[in-house]
Image (cartoon, rainbow, N blue to C red):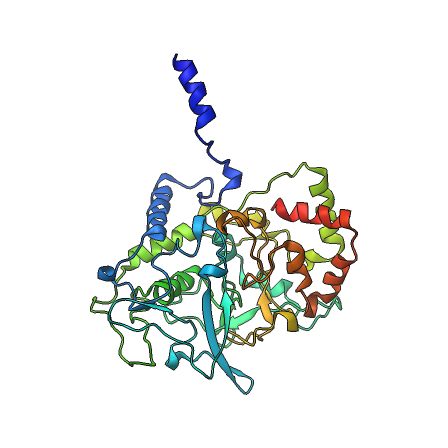
Length: 395
């Protein structure tokens, strides 16, 4: 009877997904103490903030998980709006008018923001947050070594590092290089954040309206007031909680390759390289020193170079960050592409704003530096395109 019940349950109950099919897991090899810290960060990531905890007064979402379902990529239905304007050739993030991010929701008694009439704006969908610890510990020297802003090798690809002003609380490590007080950004659509502490600090404040010692003032709707505050003492989140969340994001595992023995996948990878996709979507990078042993001097396969590239008029939103051109975007990592639908409601939304709903459509939007590679893709026959897409879906 017990055997029959066991067999029956297996037939009725859904099977747990394989590890390679999910993203929200820690990197293998963490110590027990690190796993506990990871678990606490996981709880923070999923925590839904209330008004009594300091939500807002203006905000976008009530938790990290709201945008990054299952630690995966968001979709156009929960995108964020960024705005600003050009003053000549200099980008103005319009900080004194609530920029660079629109908080379109508000707690009771407050008004949500609207976009200033003289601003230009773009929609950005939330990125996949897994494997980010590997990016954090790639050395600046390595990124400089693979950049080619003057296209010295003549291949038409001129990826460059984005030198940005770090936040006041930034503490450089041995892997960082300074240039006139600026450091290399590597996170965000325009590579505008130097490290994950900056990224998480900004997300808590700008997305949820939660302050920390790093960023102790609530977001303000300047169209109705110049005063910050939601009647909750600031900072609303202790640095210990912030660092738990940062550690969680540092130690989320990188997406696992699948179907690597499939002949179509193998041939698709060769096509990927032969038409030049790997010039920007690099298949191998290596971390430098990290005090987190599982990230220390590790080779990994993200399919990005973390550099800015000019993608031409088709992807020019007339929006910028730092000194990036409005047509420049950081190469998005391709790892996890085959699992992306899982977090996007069963439908694929690609590029910075989700405008492309298939891999083939996303490639057709490539222009600027990638125009030759796009044309190489368009010249493939249907069988070759099928194999290339099978490879990309295996990542």
